Image (cartoon, rainbow, N blue to C red; front, side):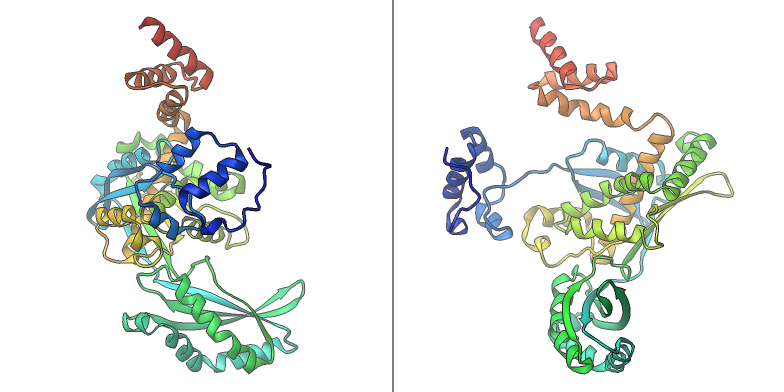
Length: 424
């Protein structure tokens, strides 16, 4: 092994085998690790090498199907890419419990994205704001000129906002261009427009343009979903009340809200990843949206209907796309979009909101009744069994016995596996 160093000059020019040899030489990676990386993806390496820099392999995440979902009157199979046990099962079970009430009803506020241009070094920020607003028609022409195809498809510049933001370095003028990006997530389109527009803003105001970048707080692109679960279908009035109390806890306490919303994102992020969209952008936007009132709160709401049933709803920014990025070049993403049968980015976003609500209901019901561990650990037991070396029929038996003992630990799994093999 060579001296460990991260200075690998010309690494990007090497082929896969040469890159792996370099990594092995400085990290001490064994042959098994090298082979694992070589065989880590069904995708051709040429594609991997174009998707990311300095590629050496892939990382396979299981893709499963959540069943039973009805969204806006249509039965939908939900492809989900996740490594976490119980996530897919929770969505399917939740959806089954509200099928008789029509499943999930959804809507979306639009498909508009925001790009921000930061203007600094302005002695008269309010006058600069007025000058910029006077140029709205000219700004629209500059922005639309950057992407004639988007305009032809019915998208393009929609509106202009100009804010005065007081920072530690003084007041800055922040210009928002609001662009309908249609079936694209839209980052590239709005970033190009912001960079093209910025010098004009500087010329008009006498200030200096600085950052020019989209905002992932996509509050012009809010997806909504709602559903009703009959009390009789989910365990009675006590369960309904328990879920409402749990939801109130999440909306009142940021420590609880963080885990509550993480559960929502278990579903949303799994669908986002399966369709080749940007999970980090969706997660950042969701958490920023949850804090928009000045306090971090729940993304979902639960209420008791006049008839004593449970009504759940969610609002979440959802900047998903069907074109651009990995959605068009990753064959698994294309297959998952085909399974969903969606015709627009708006439809995909609405389905994602429904999946987030379904995931959230499943977690809250478990927490309010038997506790989260019973279902989760039953599935997690299989992972523990595999981790200790169980194979074939041994996996199911080790997992079953772990679940029966309510002690899903690696040391216990090792003991059970030794007992099984001792009988053989």
